Image 1: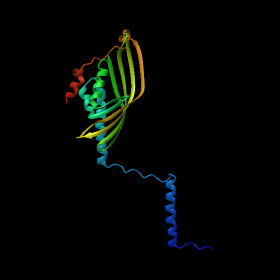
Image 2: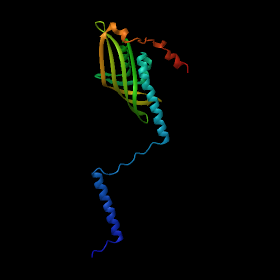
Image 3: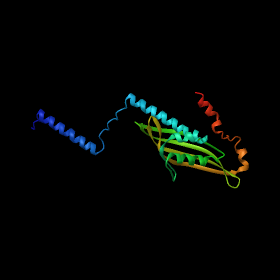
Image 4: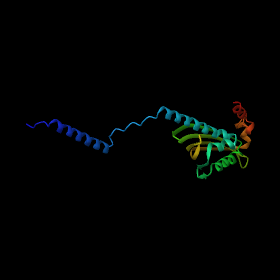
Length: 211
């Protein structure tokens, strides 16, 4: 009858067996993943403050664009920020702003919205994905008007410099675009109201200057 191994030998065998099982398990991808270390309360608060600051910058984009406010649009990106807008590349940020203003100032009306924000913050760096939608009314040749519906996503890289969050680079991805052309004579029947471009006379400026 075979004798059971003594205690020291049994411990050695168990240790060797456990080590072999760990190696085999890791090779087969079955080793349990270690849980990520949760951020400290101070780190979590810093991330929340960063996300709030970035979301407010993102919300200023449609405001600046619809009001054709160059100062607001310039404040969204760092001076050396870059933009990939379809096949067009803009460098520095001011060149993108000037192109936007030139493209929109002749429109009869434009309205932009920013939604579905996903923001990740790590220290002084961050990334975000934001859905942007726009409704544009544009006069074109031969007494015709275009209605344009745009659905895009903005993929932004951010940095905080001297306490200020702003965009380092932006990539625009077009998900959906629809254009309908109709005679200019139908404009008033299709749109009972087209908001006037009030510029700095827009009542929202007075509202925010109240505080």
